[in-house]
Structure formats: structure tokens, C-alpha cells
Image (cartoon, rainbow, N blue to C red; front, side):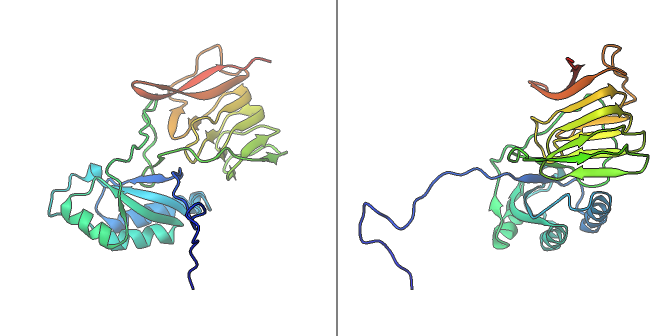
Length: 254
């Protein structure tokens, strides 16, 4: 039985504005089977990367016209299978938007999606690019790794910072939703702010990375670091500007 307050000064509910951290799936193909294969490969490489994250399906880049649709039901099933929860759709023409609303999706036409501009061309993605509309809450606690990481090893600090007390060798990969602190040489890959936290930073006592990334913005060793930071203590942060986001690598004050 529902109970409602009879006192108008004490209503049974209130309506408040709220913020929700969402990810956006920017589709670049209508082949849902291809999307499924790519997501399966990404999950194999980074188990647990998605954890019931709410997602906006962005079809703006598909160039669909009014009467064109995609296998939306199949796509939603694929997303749920890989721990993503479809909540909304963006950029859908009339027919697809009607289908989406019938499936319980919200029209997110006005949603602003963060589109990062890397300093250099990023490696070809293994899965559809996923970008966050808003950064998640600041990570709490930290994962600490006391041993050096050798080639082929991967560490993911989900929802928190990562501290590595030794070397990250070439071919190794460290990932964190928050900051990454390396009290040794970074020769492998370091990916901070993996879920879109643009405030995350990377710190290394010796900066010689194969790849560094913050919130989806990449820089690889093909674009050499300057002499004032290469092989020296340095930090990496994300710098926003009118032309997009860029990585800023500066000497680390010791």
C-alpha cells in the first residue's frame, strides 16, 4: 500500500537535479557482430574494465537517414553481456529514435560528449571508442605493487590510484582509474584516468614510456619526449584548450 503524506509541508518525495557518470559508445559500424567481437577482445585484455556502467549509444557518426535503423535490440544485448547498461541514444534519425524509445532508451540528443584530440595518432582501437561524458568520482585508496613488472604483465587499479614501487619494463602495461605513481623507470605503457578522469596524472622517477595516456588522450614513443623530461623524473597531466585536450609532460620537482 502506498503511503502519502497529508502534510503539504512534508511531502513524500522531492525532485532534485543529479549528476550521473556516463560513458558514450561512439559507433563507427552498423555491424553489431563486429562490435561484439571487438568488445569481447577488449574484455579479454582488460577483465572487469566495465562494471555495469551506464552508457549512451552515439550513432552520430554512422550517417543514418530518417528511415534507416540498426539492430538496436542486438546491440543492447551485446552491451549488457559485457557489463554495460544502455540508457540513452544520441544522433538517432526518426525511425531509430522511435525504436530506441520503444526499447526504453532516452533521447540524449543534447548530451555533450567529451571528444579528445591526441597529440599524435592513437593506435588503432581494438574496440569501439568509449569516452566519458563526465568524470567519475575521485578514486579512493590505492593499489600498491612492490615488484617490477616484466613484459607481458598488465595491472589495472579499478576505481583507485596505482603505486608501482619498481620498474615498468617495456611490454608491460599499468592502468588506473586515478593517478599512476611509478617509483622507478617507466619503459612500458601507463594509462591513467582510464574511465575518463581528466584530472588524473602520471608520475615516474624515470620517464621513458612506450605509451602514456590520460582519459583517452595518447602519446607514443614515435613522438619522442623532449630532453628535459626523457629519462628524468617527470609528470604527465591533461591540458584542455580550444582545440581539444593535449598531454602536458613536465619535469617533476624533487
